[in-house]
Image (cartoon, rainbow, N blue to C red; front, side, top):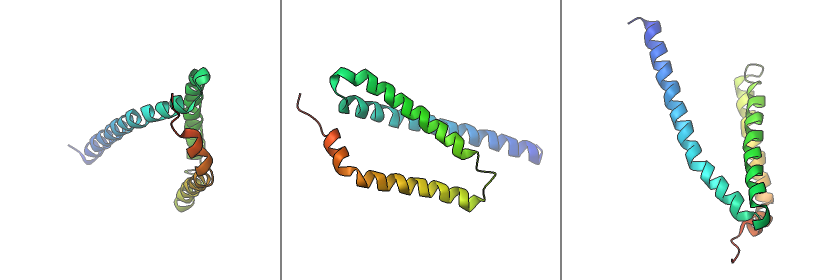
Amino acid sequence: MSELERFTEVGEQGFSQRSVFRDQARFVWWPIGMALFSRAAPPAITGLMIGVYFLSVFAGSLLVGWVGQFYEAMSAPAFWLLHAGAAGAAGLIILVLWGPLSAALAPRPA
């Protein structure tokens, strides 16, 4: 087996293993998000909020694709610092909104 054939085989196996891991991760976070949106929504608009959840996943996927276009245009440190900055900004937003979010998502007596 040539070096190129071995490299291609290993690359394909690695790609398929990452795909399996990614798909298994979706099985973990998808029900959690659905439960959160359905529990926090008023009963009259639960279906609408599930639709909003699907749209948020769609918007997140579009954002990931948009940010991915900068991979070749930016240096590697700048690209990954962009990700770190986005994660830090999201963390700060969650910290600022922690009180109102906790109150809105608290279980209500039926």
